[in-house]
Length: 581
Image (cartoon, rainbow, N blue to C red):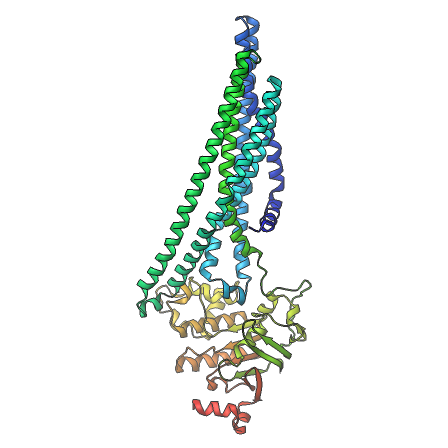
């Protein structure tokens, strides 16, 4: 287990509640003191009764002791309740929320490499299982506070027992140390027992989410039974690990209970022997026996928390790994906001390749003037979509190679870069929210009139009115209630609402029928005015109104010019055109 990871976690989150925690650390010794003075006062009451005849003076002393005892019980109860309230409402609850938020933000801040190693289901499982992180955090806090309280209580006990019989205090202290060492050693193997179980549980959850999201594939290939059998094998592994963990915990508890029983027997018999010799009084035996049972209970509780804590720490660390992963793409320390003046885009000697793949671009140069409409065409795998991703820094973009209005996009904040660009992808993904909410993703503060206007321009209005609740209809996960063409119209409406200076289109009309495409092309021509546009398309007819066409093959520009010029040249573009005619 990475101890530094857990320590960094503790430092980060406990820093938010340090004053509340400090107050608890001050209150707990006082609570421990009151708790121990209760049996101490009882022992003195017994000694007083045992050594004196009933008299008015004895009654006054008894009443004083009883009053003191009552006040200590009340104070101890109130302080304990206050500590419990602060722990739950001021420490664990808000910190649990912070953990979940950080996990969520960390996941959304990741890029391609992270998502190639982690499925959405596994990540969701870790975020959901942050409840276990909270439990682990709470368990860790419980252990630290219990350990601190136990130490304070033990010190007070030893001081009081030393007044009764010093050698008894030494034996008491040594026995407590031996018990703590035994507890620590037997708790080590609980960590390994929970490791396999936690990993497999996350993987199974990831597979279940993956199967649900691909339910259509399961249907058409009749593979449901095969997938269920695969899950059953995984569940068998989890069952075995649960059995193993349960056996380890049971065995550990047997060892702990036996050790505690031996300690309690020793500390009960020895004071009785001392009383028989006349070295201590009967009331002293009452306090010693009370402290033995009290300390035994505390140490047993401490051991139980620690054993559970060792298991929970793995679960905590498993979530912390995701928090500690540095995103593939981060803003530089001195990153500034991108300022759009004209919308000039330049790729200068661009060199780019994926880590696990070949080189995509090598010494690639392309200048797109402000307000120019450029179409990017070529065979699949040539780098067209990658070029759009590089411009948006959806992949790690090299420094000093891509510029917007003379500003290196590797030196500006990603948020300002994305805000300056409207992107219409080939497959528009929608949230399971209302149609209006999905449309307003282009502009969060858009007025209803603006949403309706964008819907009309993108021809969303044509089908929106026919939906059961109109614009308030929920579109389903990923927009499953809408057709592919309808989802693309929503994507276009978002771009209309966003109204950025730079517009990128990646096969933006590929899912539309001929009639809808005609309308959308007319709409796109309107929103393209005054913007710098890069449009990737396989259907060349959609690019006939572009100012310039750039033909890319194997990451290199092999041809460029206006659509008419390229047709006259009878080059690669003309061949592609003829294939589609």
